[in-house]
Amino acid sequence: MSKINLDRIKPDKNIKDDLEVPDKKIYLLTNHDKYFDDYKDFLEIPGKKRKWFTNHAYFCLPLSMGNQHGFIIKSMHDVLLRWQGRDSQGSLSVFTDSIWEESPQTFDSHFGSGIVTVQMHFTLRTPKGVNLMVKEPPNFILDGLTVLNAVVETDQLRRDFTYNIKVSEPNKDIFIPKGTPLASIIPYPRFFHDDFEVEVLKDKNKLKTFRDTLNYFNQERAIEYKQSGKPSLRYMNGEDIFGNEFFEHQKSLDGGRWWKKKHEKKS
Image (cartoon, rainbow, N blue to C red; front, side):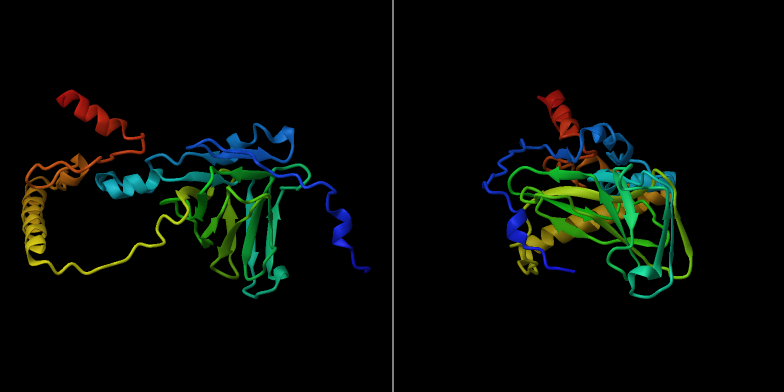
């Protein structure tokens, strides 16, 4: 095969892609107009509920908040995977009716090592300085699959990117029904966590305040649970044992409307 001169396919004119995405927006850019409405079939906000949660699980506000974070990427097709446990591309068999020319979403063994690559006919563009983190769909269970985490500078990227999922159980049929959450994308400011450090607090006065508050809370929670069988809702209601309110406490991802409404009633 003769080597292609890449300079020959470069455009003569330097065209700067200066598309600006407004704050708090993520632009979904399609490769073709015919895909304008297809995002409804693969993209959704995850919501609070999970089918496998018991009623008791909803008492845990951190879990409920975790459920709501990001945007879910769902499967648009039924997919069957079978991995033979080797590193070669051919070791993973992918069975699906997804065809690249006809569907905005396809599945393929591209990297080997039992990794199925989900390719989309879409590009996501974020405001300047905002990355997208690709993670597992929050508190959805993917049997035999592990989502490979990635961080993409989607304000800079000028092409699509793939979602990659590792088959973790070889020699087993893994069935992904249409509509299954495959991954989630979470926007966050670039450099946000780069300079965070963990430091052990040794100030005795500050530690005493923390420990007293913790001990009082644990005692109240133990007594309440023993009497009613239900956990204390101090954290859920955004206050400590003394009734001091948490700063801008959130009970759901509603832009802080719950917290603001609560304090508007007091004023």
